[in-house]
Length: 293
Image 1 (spheres, helix red, strand yellow):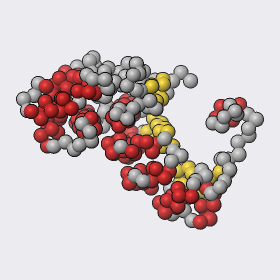
Image 2 (cartoon, helix red, strand yellow):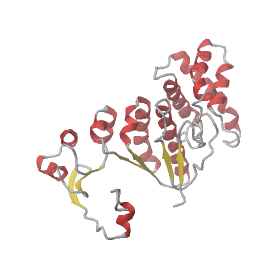
Image 3 (cartoon, rainbow, N blue to C red):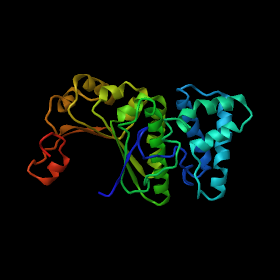
Image 4 (tube, rainbow, N blue to C red):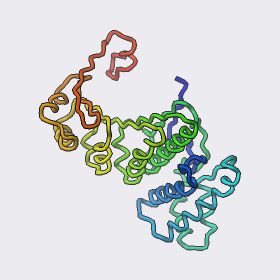
């Protein structure tokens, strides 16, 4: 379909600059203000999920504004700062806290996990983009998900300025709730993108894992449109409590065939049965069953 598949890992040749930013990023305000919040979250994740102190936050905010200054003055054209530029700016500061921060993020700027500290070399302007984070290792996974979500936010704000809608599909969404910072960023994104003309959809088979996160439960409870297919017993019970599903309605997601389930639209719950004919080209394109493709 002419889209761009972006494979992201420590050894991949694909790079996304964690500090990518366009002039529409700030929702009409100074984009650096919003980006500074993101950099703080990123630094907290880079130094092991430890909350930053007031001094460290002030230093990060100061350095973020400094590294973007020439980029802003050039009307967001030319060289976009990277995490390597950010670390260099930290080293220019007098405070010992700045030196400590620079040392803490060195592995991710000049070390073996520096894939997000380089200039973006993939087509993030393609009409159809797939971010593949399957091969992100344990160390890179938390910050990788943050960077990808921020890259998506960049694209959403660009499309909004052009009057275009954006459709976001997140497969295995439960993975993003396993890390505090990506969960919080996604929660904010989930609420914010509605006014940006974007539509976010999450897909998962692991509903039980999803419902263990308070953030995920809040998002699910506030979602206007939910499709539920056949559910395991523990998942059914949790969903029934969260979405006020009656025993009769529960029968539509209990031991049912493929294509059967419940749709929640607003406060209404509607059962459905979608029997798709197998002797069609569309079925062969869409089926995920081995041997049927």
